[in-house]
Image (tube, rainbow, N blue to C red):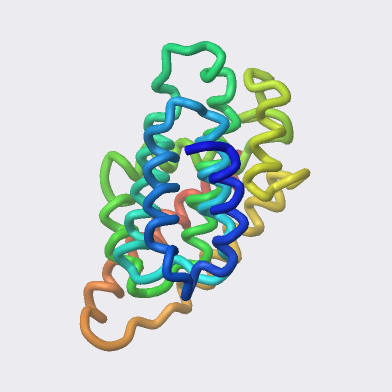
Length: 215
């Protein structure tokens, strides 16, 4: 995917709820964020997937789940490159992916809980938690407060919509997400499954928050 196309899609996702091309746009971004060899394009795609402020823009729970899985896979594989030129953007990529995952948690609804639980309850969830801890603790300009990413870390923060955001502000955002998820009420078919899954997701966030507070 070209830079221009990525920019156009990312800008258009603000209106993606009812757009006829929304499904193709999300599919393209999900593919690019998890498989493109160019890390800067991956960063742009991950940032684009975190743009919609309204849950409805992500479509139904199936599409929301695909977006989550793509970001989670991309995070797990964020060091998989033999190209040093690309590898130097890996810190930036992880910052942007972590921000995007936390954004999805922040806008998620009750119907999304089973897909989130499936990701967070196992080995993938433990890996995601490790990356999110580093993101939540990261100072501006690098992952985990280190200088390994140099200016690329700061660039990733800007791409993720988190320009000059402190660790304290990130943790405060996580607290708000936790409060909101606790108040979610499942309705209709699948209510019991959604409630059980919500408990797992809430537990994951509580553990994450506790670890960050103890740091």
